[in-house]
Amino acid sequence: MIVPGKEGRSIEKIALDINRYLSDAQQIHAIPSRKGMTKDRRDWYAECMVTFALINRALDLGFFILDIYGYTDPDGPVRYKAMIKRLHDHDLIDDKTREGMIALIDYRNRISHHFQTITSRDAWAVSDVTGIVKTYTDAMQQAYEHRSRYQVSPRVLLAAGIIGIISVIFIWFIWA
Image (cartoon, rainbow, N blue to C red):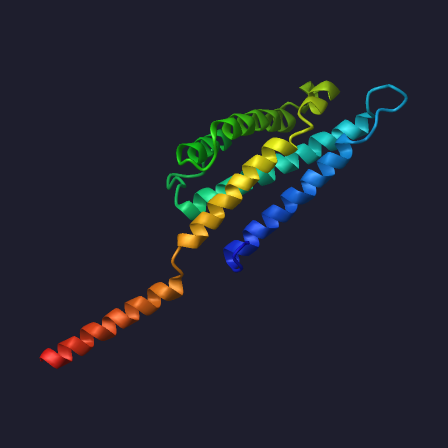
């Protein structure tokens, strides 16, 4: 599944966090209304914060994939929507996933910069983010596995280089 090593530990940690936040979001979303009223304010605060953490971790995963593919910008960090656009431009996510992630980024930005404008109705409207996040993380997992399958190990490259140098020296001694 996930290749061990420095990269593997990073992506494993991101994947574990995403799974935990998805589970938390589903549990909070499943809280029944109390006596026919809307859910408790604490519930939607929790929903907002779990959603925020989930979106951030999903974006971390996208940046990780861009980095291992070499699609990062040498001029500096990439903004969230630009990162999603790059993933889409390189066919790592489809149109629907791109649109869904951009909507989640907009909501994430409202949580972080304009929390006072969010109502409980807004929070519950995006509370079922599990579908788009699962689609997105599945696409990132496929991209990671595809890249890992075709990536040459540095040890293999070093061994090939050493064999090449030894071959050149050997041929030079034979012809000299």
